[in-house]
Image 1 (cartoon, rainbow, N blue to C red):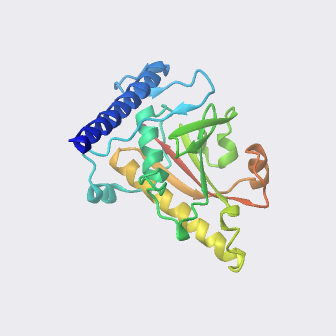
Image 2 (image 1 turned 45 degrees about the vertical axis):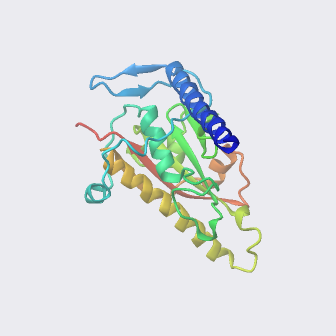
Image 3 (image 1 turned 90 degrees about the horizontal axis):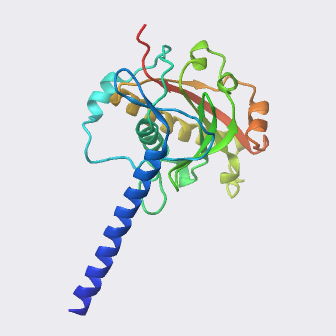
Length: 245
C-alpha cells in the first residue's frame, strides 16, 4: 500500500510538472508579437531582440510520412520573404539537431557522439544560437547579417538561414587522429543535420537549400566571438516559404 501511495504521489508530481511546463510555454507564445498573414499562417514578428523559448515538438499528432518527404525532397533558390512561424522554427530545429533522449543525445547522429556542431539561426533581425538542451534560441548579435552567410541573391530575401559551425575542441582527446580526418567527422555530422532539415522542409512544404560556406569565415567567426583556431564554418542552409512568383 505504501509503495502504491508513493507511486501515485510521484505520478501526480510528474503530471503537474508537465502541465506547468505546457502552461508556461503557452504563456510565452501568447506574449510573442505575431501578425496574421493572408493565408492565416502565424508569422514571427521580431519586435524585440531577445531570447526565444521554442515550442516542444508534437511527435504524435502529425501526418508527416518519411517516404512522402523523401519523394518531395529537393533544393530551391526561390523564397518568399514571409517569416516562418514559431511552431515551424521549433520543429525544424528539433528535427535537425534536437535532444531526443534523456542522456542528451540528438536527432542527428554524431561520430563518436562528440556533437561538435553549433547551430545558429540567422533571421533578418539578428543571429541566434540554438540551445537544444533548454530548447531556446539565444539572441547573439542584432542586425541583418544574411549577406554574411552567403553571396546568393535568394539568401537576402529568405526568412531563415542556418549556420553550422564546428567546435573542434570537442575532439581534444582525439589528438592521435589527423586534423583533416577530424574535420571530415565534423562535416559528416553537419551533413546529417542538414538532411534532417531537408526532410522536415519537404514534409512541411517549405523550400530549402544547403551550401558549403562561401563566406569570409574569419570575419563571421569574429562576429560570433568564436576562436578561428578552434572553430570552422562548415555549411549554411536557407529555409523559407516557396516563392509564389
